[in-house]
Amino acid sequence: MSTRTADEAKQRHREILETAARLICARGYEATSIQDIADACGLTKAGLYHHIESKEHLLLEIMNYGMDVFEEQVLSQVESIADPVERLRACMEKNILLVTRGWSKEVTIILHEHATLQGRARNQIDARKKKYVRFLEKTITEATKAGKARAVNPTVAAFAFLGMVLWIYKWYRKDGAIADTAIARGMVDLFLHGLVPVEAR
Amino acid sequence: MSTRTADEAKQRHREILETAARLICARGYEATSIQDIADACGLTKAGLYHHIESKEHLLLEIMNYGMDVFEEQVLSQVESIADPVERLRACMEKNILLVTRGWSKEVTIILHEHATLQGRARNQIDARKKKYVRFLEKTITEATKAGKARAVNPTVAAFAFLGMVLWIYKWYRKDGAIADTAIARGMVDLFLHGLVPVEAR
Image (cartoon, rainbow over all chains, first blue to last red):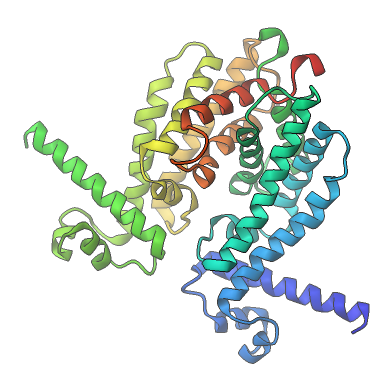
């Protein structure tokens, strides 16, 4: 396969995952059939099975696709930043823009609201999510040890970070009053500096 | 009806809503029948219809129950606190403990993840949620005007608050390493004072 063709195949596969994600979110996983997904992709059922293994495996693939894009566009971009506070800042900014632009809202919903996966598939996704929590905890601990962060509970701080970032898909609108870049700046500023001004402490 | 009997009826009604919430979360709304809910409540179908109108109305009732308890145990407890920063602090603490103890996790999931409601029912719940966002924005603006909060975007700060609080149902475990009271204290501290120590700014 030439690089061009491999890229096209990857792009086609992503389109199938995005289309399936939208259907599953709109109708529910149980109520969505492989035939529905094939129709929405403009494929025959046999044509769709050329791209996917089963409906359950497709759900796992949507989640892995979400985690792949996250690791590619967020985690791997910031891991090498030497200063732990700058690492957190860049990480939060990139993760917020991923939530607002990186893929459809439905991929986020499937990644964070779908408990339909069971067994090994579920453990695989949970392990990938946990890796991110550990990265945040480690970075926060490193910042504290360097005197650049207060002595907070790193788990609580990691989930404060994640809650601020991931709740955004529930309220952000592309045509809303606040640009996503302003949301990213505002969230980073609040996470690092808090609400109360220094002189009022 | 005597007060005792009215209280018992209210309690029974809450139990039905909690049981229905658990079933709907486990099986999905479409896949859960009124018969399933009746069975789980130890009622006949006719007996259940004595308590509820329809499956759709039951979903609306679960959400209204969630919002009722929230308004009773959080919003109405803090609205009269004069100092806006103390109002935010008490509000976050109470809301976190409501998420960890106030009702089943399934009620939270239905309140924040179920988009199954349509039309007027959906608008009703959205309006109740929006009222909380407006309360937070107004309190943050008031704190800024009083010189007790930095000049942040009140919408971004309100959703930072909500994300920190509401993401907790996704990771908190009753038998986990961190007590919910410590989570509440830690989140309030981060929201008000941020991660970075004053001397490092």
